[in-house]
Length: 267
Image 1: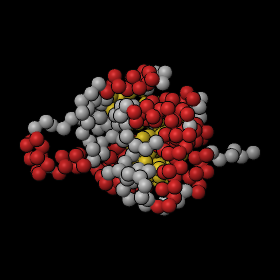
Image 2: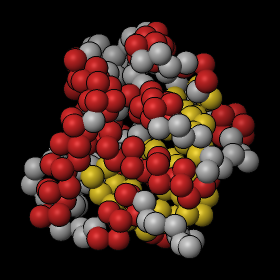
Image 3: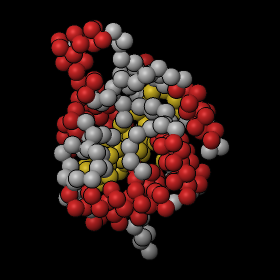
Image 4: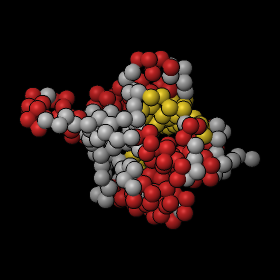
């Protein structure tokens, strides 16, 4: 007897990329998150303590996708590029425990801030003369200094999770040594939320896209500027432009939740 389609598969089968559908899906996913005690507690902690960005409905998206990946593959190897304060990797770890999923969580991140230079006159000059600097500002690539590892460990401890079970590749996704360590790694899910410049996003898509196993998924954050819809923030133009290249890399856009775009590797 054929297995019944998962919740995620049923959603993908009927999804249409229209303004009405995207707005409806965004609202319904937000409601599903707040209606789930596990997801709601995690998301509320994020919002109350400024531990991340995005929309509440992303929690529901991740629940559906992880459960679907587990149904398809059994063991799920999930990689996040760009951790910030640990919202997504802690959520993956929480979902794995609460829903008894075999999820191996990995991350690529320097786990440190990238502060804007303090001298205003210097910043003004760079803004005038450096297109790269202007793009980094526009795409939100600057973060203040903080004890990011301490923040992430406290986040994990809040939900009785063990941060040391995460395989952390400490560094930028362009680091040749780090990439060498990851050369033979493959993943069922990769979440790209690192450098939001066009060049940075394209590097991550081209470098890490081939590491997604056939049938697996790549989720691009802040990539919805070209999506129809009116009730959600759409992200950054630079990343939205970069995702145009994903079909050529063998990916098909199967679902969009707010500015998170879900691509499945189909070849």
